[in-house]
Image (tube, rainbow, N blue to C red; front, side):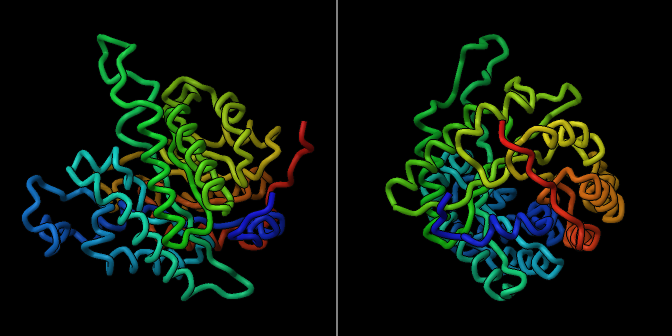
Length: 338
């Protein structure tokens, strides 16, 4: 496939294991920001509380977001994600800030781009992944336990929200799109439909990474599909990478990654949480950098993955340990397409 950005990424994927960054939210918590920090001067008079709206910090505390990006790049990340996990109109409407979503995406991509450009070298180019997360509303799961047929968002509303998000990320300088933490396949289809539409409208084509979330030991995503069914539902998008992230720690994620590695004709990504939640821990999660990196090194040695990184509870220390662990290891080889 001919890409207009990150044209060298497919070749890099053939030669080594790529490292993604870690958690943004975990790092933001380290700064112990207040409601006033989130508001800045621009949103002093906003009618409702905004603390916890991490995407807003892109506009009010860009210094914090840039510093976090820099720490992950310093730790060895090849790809950093924009601070846009919840930067859709659908998600921002919860804070009555839906009209800011486009600006949040443009500025978030610009911040990540500037940091990447500082660290990028010919031997180790760095890439900006435009992060496209799930929304608080889903297209195929009812918000009402008494009415399984009820929906609080339409496919068309999601498509428009994702289109606007992706357009902002592209304008701000993203190299790739990452549709991540997918628990509802229909939401993901809306996002991928929007990306395809954007590519047609602009003449650009960026690599697309897709990452789903297995929510429990059933091995299914929340909307009911097994991981294999999830792959077959979305493989038409021809992603540059496909994999799993979030909900489970690496050890619990391994059987699903191993199963997929047998047959997927696509590079595999895996960026787990730092184990299970632990309120007594500094990061809110169980695993130290040594533990998480040990699991991912084993995945890599076993030939299961092409990209590794971290989700909730991971820090630059985790990413540095992960990058050190996989350095020099061969990436998973592609099986022949069926």
